[in-house]
Amino acid sequence: MPNRTPSRLAVALALCFSPILAGAEVPSKAPAQAAAPLPPGAAAPASTLRDGLQAARADRAGSPEATRAFETLAARFGTPLYVYDRATIVGQARALKGAFAPRFPKLKVFYAVKANTNGVIVSLLRDEGLGAEVVSGGELVAARRVGVPGDEIMFTSSSKRPDEIELAIRNGSVLNVDSRDELEQVSEIAGRLGKAARISFRINPGVDPHTIHQINTGISESKFGLHLEDGIALAAYARAKALPHVRITGVHCHIGSQITETSGYEATARKMLAFVRELKEKLGVTLEFVDLGGGIGIPYHDGETVMGSEDLARALKPIWDDGVKALGYEPVLWLEPGRFFVAPSGFLLARVNSVKTTPVKTFVNVDAGFETLMRPAMYQAYHRVRVVGPAGEVQKLDVAGDVCETGDILAADRMLPRPKAGDLVVILDAGAYGFSMASEYNARPLPAEVLVDGNDARVIRRRGTFDDLFRAEAAPAAPKK
Ligand code: LLP
Picture 1 (spheres, protein in one colour):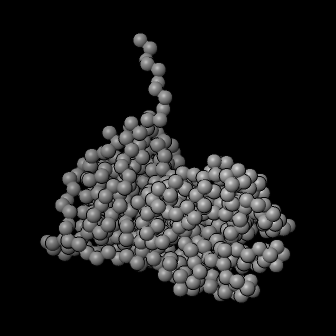
Picture 2 (picture 1 turned 120 degrees about the vertical axis):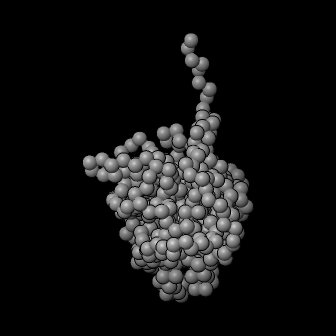
Picture 3 (picture 1 turned 30 degrees about the horizontal axis):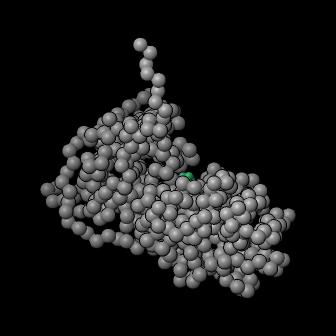
């Protein structure tokens, strides 16, 4: 059955409550200290589930608190399991606002829902005052159903269906238009509805922020946005200005994802503000907002140093101030990160099915794979992996997924304590583009999702079932006798 029973009994929950560290950004330098062994015979300190999760992040997955937390979660909810730490999500949102709001008094932050679409998570970020950036009708519904107001939704996609355009217009959301062709469709649909569509255009600024190729969106050859060259973007605004059912509200760009340095943002901000000035001077168009996109990276490696939200805010401040001065008015700065808010909150907990040493490698076969977490197979993305519980001998291991494909390796050539069948491994920073990219490939039901709040844990999406796999299919013909 998909809800796999753990091979070990869970240890009792520690009932003592310790304060939650909300409001703190996950450090841009990930800690890498070794486990501090307890003196022999010492009583394990009472700790919360959250303490256990954080101990694993701090490379203390062998500690009693981490062992207790993950064994408890696996026993209660089964594996594979996505576990999110509420305080980290709230803390990341507050860190970003804390870095930007004092420097940019006119600021609106959106959550890019694609990173994690779970309604409980979207609502946590809505409660922090964030709007939603969506890329499909389904994501728009995901935001609306937890009460994000329609006019606080930004709809971006380079390929929108007519019914999605209609949905965005009916909800009063901003349609972030990606082509002249789309603009004409938006105008026609808004006219038919007797409404004015709020629009911005997505600009391709031709900037390389140095990230993974597949998620590098602002380079000239990418499929996204209107180029600034040859007056292409300017002509689109001129046309929009002439259309009665279109109301120009802003301008947008998004140069990529998992960006770890500020230089790409700086170059982009300069280009965008120069363009906004051109709009005013050549077309007499003023904008309500300038959206500089999402893309803020997080440290996926132990000891890695990346740009933090404070670094980015500080780097953008003088560029913004100069641009605004030259412009003669101040638009609202819009930002729309996804990963930054949720990635560090997430843990993918998996159980070891078997361990095999071949003449070449040792494989730790776990009960998750690229159907559960696609990033390693798709982008060769690196996620830290920890083995839960008392450490075995440290050796070079591959953590292999359960999909019948050679490429399904979750982590290659890692120095890890050798686990045995039944042990737990936990994959860190899996809160963004983990569950949202999961599939039922190999007919494996989707994992459950759990939210940890201090010492509480609750299911925020139940585990998929075999019935779920086939629910939408037509009834097969009865077997021939
Ligand atoms: N805005 C737009 C228009 C986007 O296309 C994206 C992400 C975001 C905002 C949010 O970017 P973030 O802050 O999360 O980096 N599946 C890939 C990431 C794809 C990102 C696509 N667009 C991954 O697993 O790394």
